[in-house]
Length: 122
Image (cartoon, rainbow, N blue to C red; front, side, top):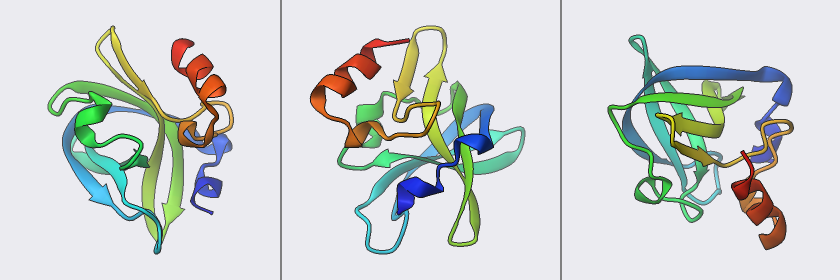
């Protein structure tokens, strides 16, 4: 059900600095998720990234305090506006992808071959 909240028609991109990571429960009964707070010009936005088991904050490679671009889609979950990330980019050389930008398909639901193909594509 959670993945149905990602609406590719609501795609957007944000730019700011990651202030801190959070362990969240996206929907009641779900496994913990990895999220972070993005300071976009004084506004703090909660960005849902992926299941904690897929990548903890340390495993993502995303650094706090660094200018960060996030592509994804807006969603309302439990009455709160959140941003569901598809791709996080820091600097010229670092990116962490978790969803297909075109339709929001999560990488953690893909088979090994499909996942390898997506992780190696730009």
